[in-house]
Amino acid sequence: MVSCPKCDGEAHRSHTRGLLEQFAKIASTYRAYRCLDCGWRGLLGAEKTPSKTTTRRKLTIIIALIITTALVFALMGLIDYTIDSAKNPRKKQKSAQSN
Ligand SMILES: [Zn+2]
Image 1 (cartoon, rainbow, N blue to C red):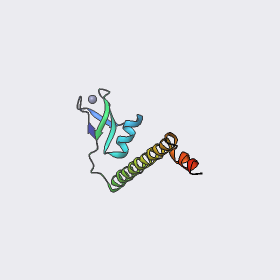
Image 2 (image 1 turned 30 degrees about the vertical axis):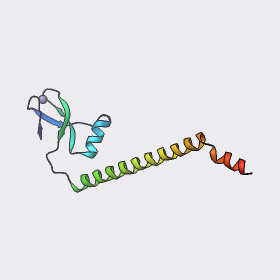
Image 3 (image 1 turned 90 degrees about the vertical axis):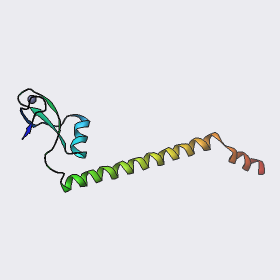
Image 4 (image 1 turned 135 degrees about the vertical axis):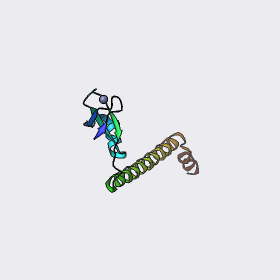
């Protein structure tokens, strides 16, 4: 059982709401709690040490982030290349002059 940081009453696990709490649930040991006495609601760190599954989840998120970043950079490079070839049609002109 967890005690409320506001009134030191009984805080129970609450359903996760929103992206921040969802992310906190996946990426950290923090969980949403609600106080039965004063109605306080917020994130509190879990008493347990992170399990192997939590570590694996973290690793999966990190790998997903790296892949996403790499994809974004690859897309940016592709867009740059497309813009460059649209702005500088020199290659076409040169080939036209030689012919
Ligand atoms: Zn409370």
